[in-house]
Amino acid sequence: MGATEKLRVGVVGLGMGSQHIAAYQSLPDYFEVVAVCDLDPQKARETAQKFQIPAFHTSFSELCQRDDLAIIDLCTPPALHFSQIKAALAAGVHVVCEKPLVGSLQELDELKRAAQQANRVIMPIFQYRFGHGLQKLKYLQAQGLTGQTYLSTVETAWRRRPEYYAVPWRGKWKTELGGTMASHAIHTLDMLTYIVGPVKEIFAFTTTRVNPVEVEDCVSISMQMADGSLASLSATTGSTVQISRHRFCFSNLTAESNLRPYTNSGDPWSFTGDTDELTTQIEQALAGFVPLPESLTGQFYRFYRALLQGEPLPVSLDDARAALELLTAIYYSAYTNRCVSLPLEDDHPFYGGWVSHFS
View 1 (cartoon, rainbow, N blue to C red):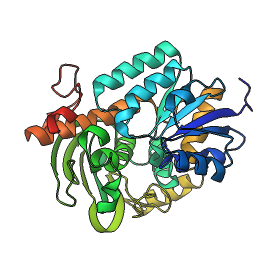
View 2: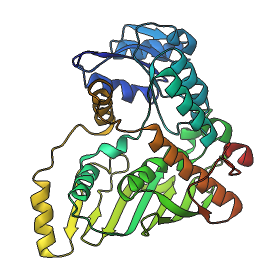
View 3: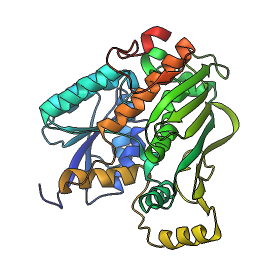
View 4: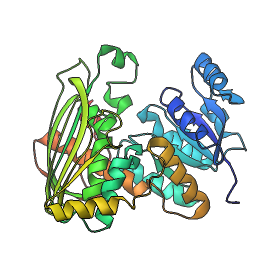
């Protein structure tokens, strides 16, 4: 492959998929979306027309039979991901897939083996990582300016009303694979571990109070991180005022995000040194920060450089496994009312998934 070669993409599932298409088209030197796919013929046709995409399909298997794709991007209901990823790998393409990637550690481990056998890449979507605010904290951390982690707090306070669950697959264990933890707060949890590292122990309470759905819509979690620091996460779909918030207390500084519900990883973030001298050092260091594209565009930009220029994947299957392991531990803790230690081994009761225990 040449460094200037465009990668041809097919996008499947045209709800969230429209955001993915827009992100690919914002990088016209890197990607070309040549086909879209949705079970709804009208949505497929209208999306193709809106984004000036030459082909649309209503059959996923038909899309997989194309011989001109480098990437299939899956924005489909979570319960379909496992089989669709396997089919895309068998078709010889790389795979981009929305969260949650799959519903069990067992399925993820199987996909990892399938990707290795196919010599193709699976990239999960965790686009919140690439906001400039969070990236600045990552940069300060790499410069050795944050110091020891003390305490981290994460809030995901969003609002989802009954019309949100009118989509048939939402709010059900067998199709959505989980509630606000799996579908919403998984992003903010990934941001936490992206900065602080792995979780050692976790205790979770989950409940359903906001809407008459099967899955959880309120969550409160306490964590001990592997580095010895503590963290807490709360999530709800019942907040009239929607916010997302991260606050990291380190020995050298405190970092706090903005409160925008869906872009809180972007600027502005505040970084306050524990002394005036440290604040000056932080300001001087940030003068050297080089911003790259954010959100989905930022993840796809880095994905291209990983595939064609040998850079590390921006989000790997190992990252997805870490997130899935946390989801597994959260649901197991809520199910058993017990503290759960990580990592989880393949003999864990929920290694094969949690859905059957709740549905």
